[in-house]
Length: 318
Image (cartoon, rainbow, N blue to C red):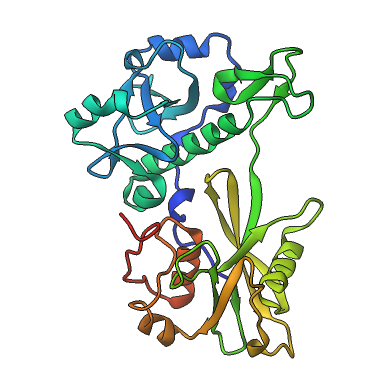
């Protein structure tokens, strides 16, 4: 079975020029601070200011002079050939921005909650900004020498203060798998960190020195005790909480494998259930499925052949 993209998954959408070549340009950050077309996205943890399902940008002059900027790129859909510079700033707290929020009727919204309602441009910028700032927060020191690091190259590098060596952003690869049996039923699991009625596809991180296909087979066996074959790549989506990329695969039970022989590992996965399409549609009022921002939701809907009428959101909230 193969799942083909008809449209990008919610957090895989993007509509701006990342302009990566410009990141190393001397004086870029000063240009961002002074250019009248620079628009700043505020980030606090995994939240930003949102009003009417759109990001509220601020001017560079509104941001403190010692702020750490991350250059996100250039606007694509503007009439001015100079375009607009897009950058992000990590707000230390939300208190100092309350007046601005009130002026725009905005609120601090979590990307996992509002991501599916944002435009393609805003979703891409928000996802990019969160991923980079989560990396900054976790790498104040050089992992090789332990020395302090500071932002460089418009926020895309951290340089060690002692020898200037560079630490680059990292992304942790993970596989997420839509497993089917010979009757084309789908396997869903309940994670130990979730509510008891929330179910999703099985997923896990890729081991060092491991192929993606091998990770699919290993993770499914570890979490369910089932053997699968034919891992087939479906697509990917960034998941910046704090810094992963989810790579979607489909797989089938191995020939001769009894689908009822599954056994949840009891640590990460507590319960496993098989669903036919009719059973899944009939269970929407009894179980919570992944929110619309998740690649798991996209994969389940492609298997189902229709959208699921459920707004369970992230942790059940909008």
